[in-house]
Length: 445
Length: 162
Ligand code: SF4
Image (tube, rainbow over all chains, first blue to last red; front, side, top):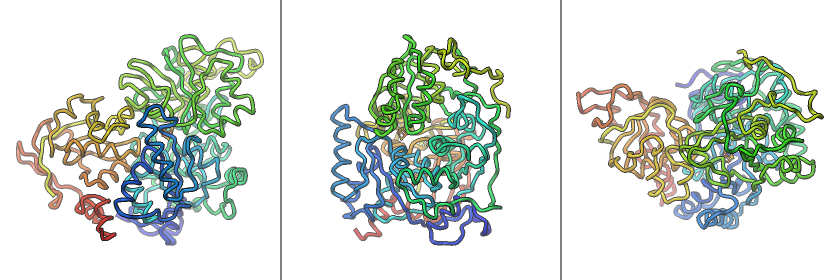
């Protein structure tokens, strides 16, 4: 049932109110909204839209508001994936989609890096990690192929105004502790069943985070089961918009109202947080990395929209410099976008990775969803910077996937065992002074 | 709308990767459906009959936005999914392709293979073994409209006059 209308709105409610042309909305109301940006990827976008648009004899409602990204089946490895990629190219040509990114990287990393996200937008994406765009003060949610087809034709959809959970993160992160560790921890604390709710991330830790790290928070709101994970606009957002050619004028209005009503506020103190690892087969199976110490890994994977941005590669490189990948494992690195590859090549990050023995893969979803290169065999164990470790996702159903930060995955690559990055032995001389002990309990809540 | 069939009972957190595994995503809808839920019950796809009803716990369909997760169940002839709760995208996808999804927790009450009869119009689910009936929460009218039209595409076609 809809609650009484309130004039103090959460950021979620503000954006939805704008999208349905009203001053205010209340949780539980069902509203029809105008979509500002629609994203479709190769697995669920043009491949599904094309035949349905033909059947209905319709065009796109506004080709300039549609983004198409081929990232799941890239590069083609067989005739089926080649065919799927050809469909996207043909679709972009036929329907006049100019924002078409063919094998340029993963959609959720491309949209921020190309300045396509404007704070206050209602973004609908044919992919469950569409919430990533929430880091730019957008309401961004995933939709299935029939919903996105209807949006492609009408520019509209319906939504139930969600309740908002305020996740307030306070404190200073220790070295080797990242937004990924926070989110793995949060998956355990909040559980993965927050359906029909949004999360807004607030607090001093978020304020101090880079855009790259904020994108991790919003990305993994999907793992909480939340429909969106939104961060209010501040100087960091505006600076990122300026640098990527995005629209920043008026962006500062996209923050929650003082006194807005939240379903609940969850406060996290991250001062004592250590590196976290989620065990198979769910992101909520999280414990301190130390508790998994000694688990042998066949593969270490640095990839995905959440875990292979430039900063993620730099984190991995900082651990790997002057060290070697253990002969008992393999380290695969699939940079999130081609621009990431370019920048990582320019600043020496790629060289540090390959010198340590990392194997470079093309940009794209790769092994993350089991559709590209790097999938795992029956009985194999992988530690990965990806966001999801459901059974069978990365390859064989009897494989085990652990989730962790780029630091922890890199540290595990060096030993061939799951390793807390702080526990690495024989640190290279240049970094020796940075190694610090942390209490074994790792986190105190 | 009436659905009648045997119950297949599953637990909590049935995700989209077990409903529509990534390694089978390039296959045809029929080919993909053969892998539906195989990580949990290898016999499901082979033995499920048209009209059968999936009964599950919390957060059914969490994970990916892939509509194939709902489509795989529908392709196998599953008549409805009754779960304690649903992930949002799966819930919308199921409605959009005309697969009835009902929020009700019956995992403790229904045995595997038991005959169930779902009457969506009346909002009642009946267990045939002992005749017990459970009332359903009323569905929002726009969702009933999509289901009765036969899914969102069918509704769009009506709206576009095609
Ligand atoms: S990298 Fe993984 S999580 Fe991200 S869009 Fe691709 S398949 Fe989804």
